[in-house]
Image 1 (cartoon, rainbow, N blue to C red):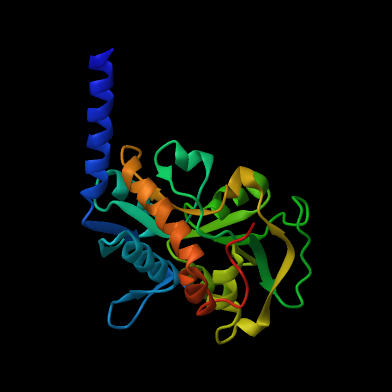
Image 2 (image 1 turned 180 degrees about the horizontal axis):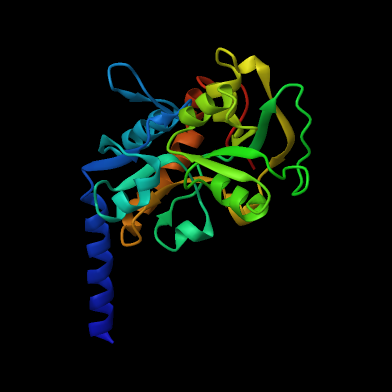
Length: 256
């Protein structure tokens, strides 16, 4: 019995020690998903995700190092230890949880279709038949579109949202599907975006879009997950989250 208790104490102390070893955390970021992340002309990555990452690291009293990474290579790069966590507007889904662990959510927004104004399109398998729809590759929107309308539409997948926007303006797409905030700020509110509009209902089915947006961590790094969860609660409680949010949005994106 004493031996079992001693082993439990050692394991507890080891876990505590491991949690205190995080001096620098390398964070995978995208840099191509405004306003959550974007790359300036000087090559600096900025945006809501980046400010949240910095605030969390400050709360945890650790140094942050942002590591830019293309979206479709995010999880493989995390698993190969290119960085320690992903803060890149990644939805918490059952499929992704097979490979990585997630913190609690730090925001939650739905997706929606965009069309050119004046174009009559009905959202149904029959109404979308033959339409060409643009979506960012390997996103939850991609998975939803493939599963629900893949037999009816032609799906064009892009490495970044900006590539999809360019094709939409060039007339090579009938529709876009994506998160309402990047579509609004990155497309509809930009030059030429006033010719397009959201239509149809917002879509947030948990089967595809999960439980919100979280921070992805390798499964063996539970201590880091716990640190991030504590920090998320802290910046929500002390007003830091709200200050950052108000610099980008005029509504609460945290969700229920």
